[in-house]
Length: 173
Image 1 (cartoon, helix red, strand yellow):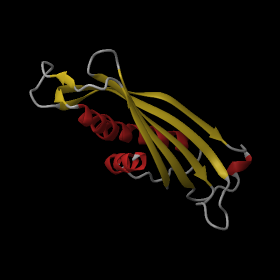
Image 2: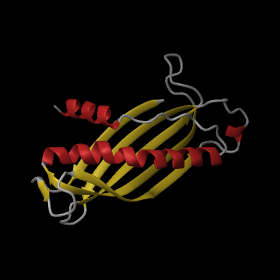
Image 3: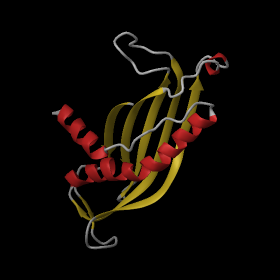
Image 4: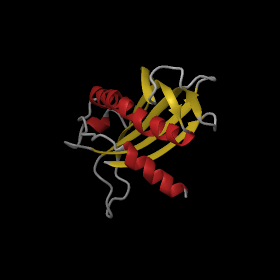
């Protein structure tokens, strides 16, 4: 499985003071989660189903975005996954294998922040911790649509959002 990752947060630049909200320690409050968008494009139907490989290769791109909702310490975090099912893994001999299907999914959630949170801590909470809550149901929806389209379900391992976030920060320097 191939993965790439991008992320961003939109909102105020000052530190958030939500000390009167709930507990005295800072924390991330998980609210509603929902499927914002899902689409699948199966290439070359119905011929594609004649010679399906037993386990297609899947390549994925993962994006995480967060945006503040109004003046409150409430954010919408979106996990966008774009996946391609390929006949086999890209190789030197076949750098562009046949595409079987393309899936695009946006899964989002509402998250609140409580306590005194410095601005430099907001981004990791929203772009590392929040996607950890969103990934399991997003993966389930992705695997379900692939299965319902008539393809073998791939094995999609959990994503280490912390390592990906740190890697992204290193790229921006």
